[in-house]
Length: 114
View 1 (cartoon, rainbow, N blue to C red):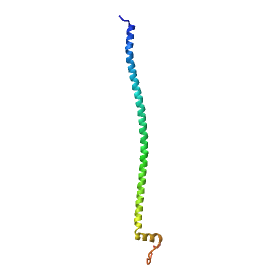
View 2 (view 1 turned 90 degrees about the vertical axis):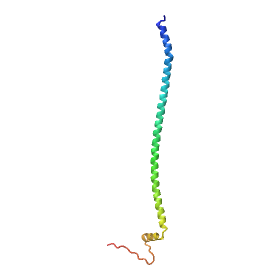
View 3 (view 1 turned 180 degrees about the horizontal axis):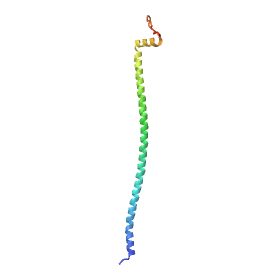
């Protein structure tokens, strides 16, 4: 019969390769997890950074759209004024109100303060 020391040696030899396989698998899993943690951290940082940049650019875009609307409105008013200045009657009204100019034979009427 075999002694107990011989049996222990045989059991250790068989357990050795299997234990190293488990250790190698654990090491690969830990490396994979470390990579995934680093990748997820980088992705989160990039997402947050891009979100803040998009918010800033959206605010600038809204401001520019507001400015454009004001400019378009002013342009429309100026175009209307140009069209009105083409009318001789309107020019006469401006000349009477601002510059006190009247057509020959017209008598100006001024309000009297009491």
